[in-house]
Image (cartoon, rainbow, N blue to C red):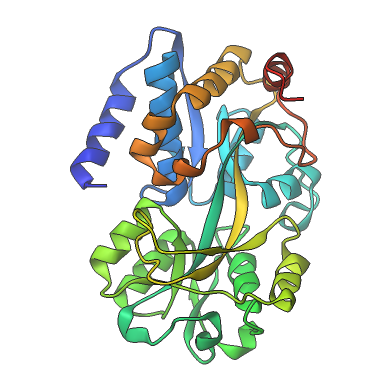
Length: 316
């Protein structure tokens, strides 16, 4: 997406308040330019154009940091993957002893597909090729980065001992290190605007195929039971997918504080159902959005307005 178009979209969201809900509301996202930031822009644009909601993306260093502020009631909505969202709500793993019990589900958005990305000169086409390569580790500012990358590495039968660790602090630092050539791979979010950005900056940028065996899937499930491995073929809109590749997939959700206004929650749901073209105009990932799949039981209660909406519309 051209920089001028992004700037125009951000300005329009900041300056135009819709007629249906005069109070500004916020959705916590990850940093400017990341895939999840574009999710926030897409949802905000649909909410404004379809339901008149003045929804504004609010970027944080990580989705986990944003969840803390939603839990406090300082933001109205947030975006997070189903795996860590449940851990946060239940107080497990990174959130042990500090459960985010005020979080409530609003809707499943899209399947999030990720693998490693590499340059054309790297000689890396499969995860097994990462042995001995410079590999990002650390992710001190996120609750998810290290675990995610170790899980993808494990699909090739590799562990952190098989790569050369290079510490990065967060997703933004990882991207800069990759473009500079300090590390050999980054994370490629399939179909996202960030892939287009890296394709312009790194010659031959392409998707790396993860392991595809039953053992690979078992190793992945040991770390992330709610994830899955899927095979993608090259097609229009999937920049960097040059041949069939295996990628990791898990679901991304929009959630809210338990006291977020019912009208705002209902407005978000209505705008998601009617906003297909608007959503995909900002993030191509929303081509995979299925309104019929917005309601799923992942062990976290729904916001009361969302639960009422799904009941009234025959989702449950």
